[in-house]
Image 1 (spheres, helix red, strand yellow):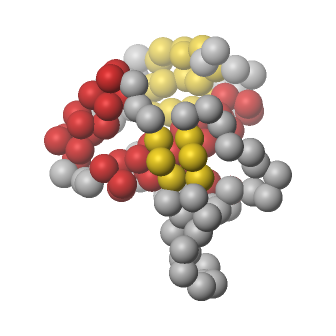
Image 2 (cartoon, rainbow, N blue to C red):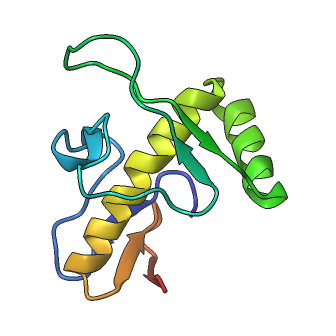
Length: 121
């Protein structure tokens, strides 16, 4: 996707870069009680006592391609790895919600008005 692109589920209002991320499901700091550990991801129990801003430590095994994307993202944004991963997970959740609403595809509208349909499989 080119910089300045706008993501929009097919047939829905456009989501611009200025739109604030949803604070509902996407901002959870703890996995839901019914979640299970998946291959390659080990969830350690939360440390510390109580509070709504409690952090959860997660160990993740990255493929070389994913690690390269992480490094490129930290270089481009100046953010640390934790911030890049946190934001990537929020974006991933948002894209999945938009794909659900759009029947399995997203429409990207570039600055020049060109539209591209992206099918997520």
